[in-house]
Image (cartoon, rainbow, N blue to C red):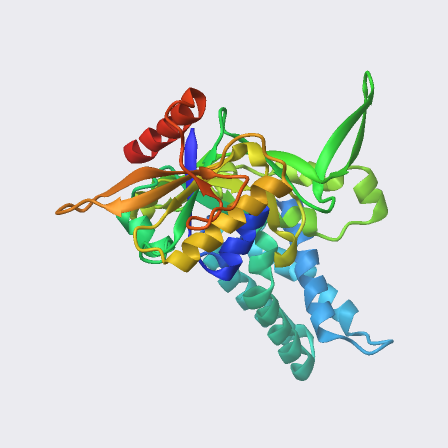
Length: 391
């Protein structure tokens, strides 16, 4: 299958094309602010709720930044029993949505803090709780999802308008036979398993990995997820608890919803994008500079130039493709196509311009017309061109 990435013809995009790179964005960096934000339900037994309150109280103490020998941390942790009783009301389990949880936590802690602490200490502790709930809990709930997006269509006028700089940009053509995509980095960052014996494996990190294309599903309602799924692994555990797999035990005890669909669902209004995406196969937070990753050269088939692309941008893109082919020692051809607006219709037609050459010509840098007598190359170009126009 072929899939496509629309881009502006700016310095950054052309530089990334030159190296075969794509950028994996976090949900906060996407243009859809609702991306990867499920409807959180906090559903767990009393043991998990008790551990959650421990974590909340520890976060309050951390934010208050006590002086040495202060007795206030002990007083704050003495509120745990009252908080647990207020939230659970003697029940063995509790299920509540995110907004209700914030209200109940704030009300219960405020009530008990004002009853049992000095007014100034209680006020500072309440402010610390509000700061944690408003600024930190949300990021704790969300796992480290990083994704890059593509489209199944290369001739969508709206996509060319939104992401192809009003048809002055370009689209990269990729291919995957089975939906898997090989990626690589200059540094080790992908988890891997290496077989060392018949029944023995070594866990490590690698510069190479494989990730699967995911077809986005468009729905009117967000994914439902248990909020404890994201935060149980981030609780503080003693060394003994960690050694006894206590975090895994707590995770196994909570009900599951549709957590596996996070990152796969978008609101119906985005349906025109016909989006495919790749998730970066990492399980820790990565700063933006470490999320530019190469898609291996066997997947890169060529580019489509926008109908309004400038001559200078066109030449820069051709030069980038020439460098890409040479630097990665690509044995297969990279094809170049041109998008054109169909007269009198809201439609784009794409035709073949040629392939990236090993030589530079005077009038058309790095571009060579395809010889019709070269049956294999001509057939490959026609196959891609047909797929583009039918997409």
